[in-house]
Image (cartoon, rainbow, N blue to C red; front, side):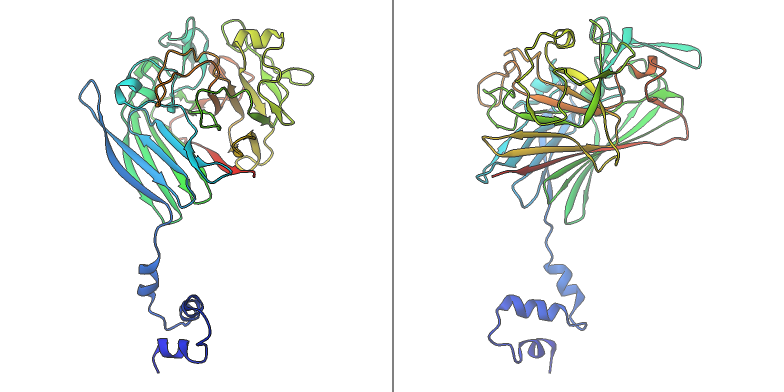
Length: 394
């Protein structure tokens, strides 16, 4: 009696699904048949996104799972152009800022969705010293250098490779930043891998090697608005940050070198608090950042596992949780969005209509001897991962 007949015999009242399970448990079942029936749960699709002003062809990759989450990434700047997740009604909507054309991304903008490097955040007066040699960077945030310079990683074209494995889909981006590009020493080979899982997690893995001593601090600069309505601010979002201290800054937003306790200050997000609750409180640090634009020193006992940031938007039910192995996170409340940049739907991105959670080492670390080091030596491997997980509360 063949395998199928033995499976059916004596269980005619069971459903076809039960028969299928019984058959798969039979050791003689054809393994080729089983594997061919298994379909990928997370997919990745490539399409053309356009051509830069320099004639470079740019591709877009859509990562999509079975739970209504989609992430679109372009090879220009490694930019996340769209990120759709369900609300509590099951409706998937875009929750990140972005534009509708490549030309808009080429223009000066506040790093919407982009990969940031070689050094995320600010370096004082664009200078740092390694082994007695001073390096001068471009000043693009007077009087300091910001996010790798005027042509940081957010303005370059990345090489892309697809990686599929059924329950996940990954886009591995690579870029060779040549010695002295934007003033940084060493040929830096960089890899950034975006991975979408079927439980609505977007993992971002950063890797790099160098042939000369250099500094590296990579991050991701997506602006979130969990309401999916960019005519509304993020002030009604509830934020939790697992951090006892911040990195206070001077009038030019460069760290003072000291760490400051968040207790009894507007910077205490250790318990859930609406972003808008204290943002207008009279406070020197808030005045300097025109709101929240600071690095929090993370309490991170199980790096990569401890939730270090959580955002909850009650009307939509959406929740964003962040894990990382980085020592800090820059929470930026979109204070410099000023209504001059177009949304996808005909409006503009107004004041505080998006928030950033940039996992990173502290600003100006190359000039701050007491901060965790950002130095990368030849023979060493830079490797760090951040995960953005989405869910809903009904």
